[in-house]
Amino acid sequence: MSDRTVLACIACSAVIVAALAAAAHAQTPSSCKEPRAGTSRVPMLSPPLANVVTGKGRLQFYSAPNLRCPISGVFVIPNDELVAYAQTDDGWSSVMYLNPGTGNDVSGWVRSARLKVTGTIAPK
Image (cartoon, rainbow, N blue to C red; front, side, top):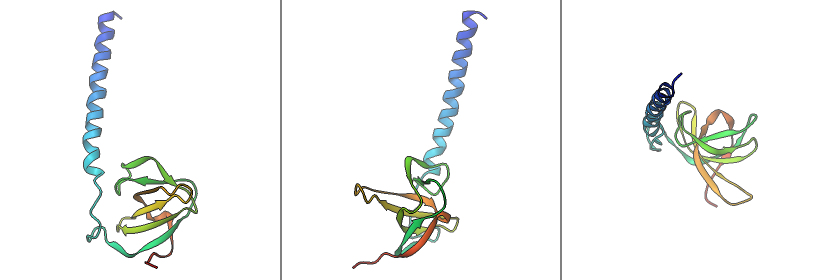
């Protein structure tokens, strides 16, 4: 293979990879847009529900109720406690997790099937 052919293959591959990346990136913003809570599609839970994570392994957080929208490096594990504020009919919960060790919190969407309701959250 000549140097010219190799360079042409590399250039062609770069164009294809760039086009695929642009197409994937173009789909991400619309599919990862968080729906508005308090609508018929995403009813609010009133009062919010206290939950514990069940099952095995990590429960991934998502930026929207869509499996293509994971929040990198953000997850909870079994027995962690979450507060659910809204829930969709197709199995997603809008939740908040407060890390008891650091006091840091994170909000996002998780699969509702991994949550067990333990009570309600109300003002004291």
